[in-house]
Length: 273
Image (cartoon, rainbow, N blue to C red):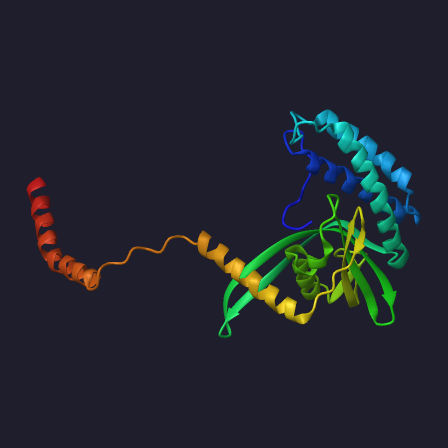
């Protein structure tokens, strides 16, 4: 997920954060089993793990996490299991096509160096966490897919290509992963990345946005403007300037007064001795 890492904490949160935590954790377990045993657990096995995580999170929570009258934890519990079963099918389909699991909850940091008229001007640092990254071998190198699990209600998909998160993932992966280490980490051997895709898995199904170069150019301009506004907002206030001629006039007055001040201090020193 982009910008914010959501984790369940006993001291707060809401029901949607709890559902997201439970479902993501269950998927992480299923992928871990696949990486270690070569078999992706069934939907019912994954739901059983989610039920245990839910019970633990429910026992640790403090206070009411429901938003509206008439809502119940039991109702959200059933919704969570239904959505998990539906999304499990989408994740299984992805693994059939892309059997190499690069990682889950994969943290990444990307640095944008900004230049103006050829000179270094500023630096923007973006931190992202990818839910699920998979790949497959091709004659030209690795084809990589960044998968994002969307555990909430499915949005209208027609305009997903304009979504800020979609375009940010596209930009960062395009810039960052011309090569990728496998296994992922400092010890992995660098492999060429021939292509990449962004895929979102919703309870209603999977969706793969397709971006064109014009939308990418517009987004990069938008992102640069956002970063510049943030930088301007966080910049320390500029020092107050003297009125025109004020600084020079003050300097001349100090220089003119120095002989008198030095003579007065000598006189005082003699008087004290």
